[in-house]
Image (cartoon, rainbow, N blue to C red; front, side):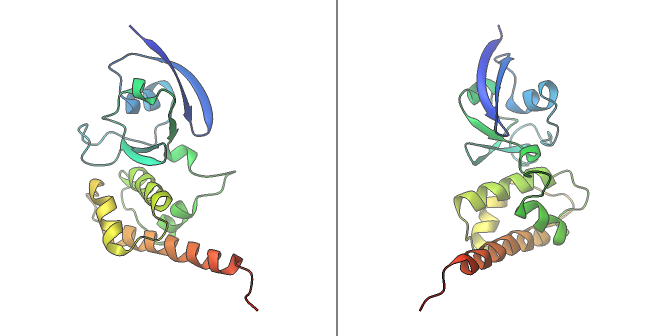
Length: 166
């Protein structure tokens, strides 16, 4: 028996009817046409299906869609603003932190979650946070460089926006 839920997806309130056994990934892809998150393993270990739920990275292949009731979901499609890439997306392009691209949306979503939780992570924290995202092409060093460039850029913007001391 399907159940109605209300959730916010990419800043848009959605009223959807979902079967109790459908995962968030299935609903996002098959019912809402948001195909950025992909199923890699189906058991929550590869990270390719990562989305943010209330600003925290979640393996959408493990979360039942009914558990999205009242939650805020952000997918890769909701990260850019007004046609502009997010700082994380730009950094991935600048650092060439992708090869085949299969894991890239999940990696970007995990990094978005990291930056929201800890805007100034060190390399060990970055590596630990991204340990649930696998890349078969081995772009890890470029991903680390992308995250570090986002952190450096944010720090520079913060310092430049402070009033000068007298």
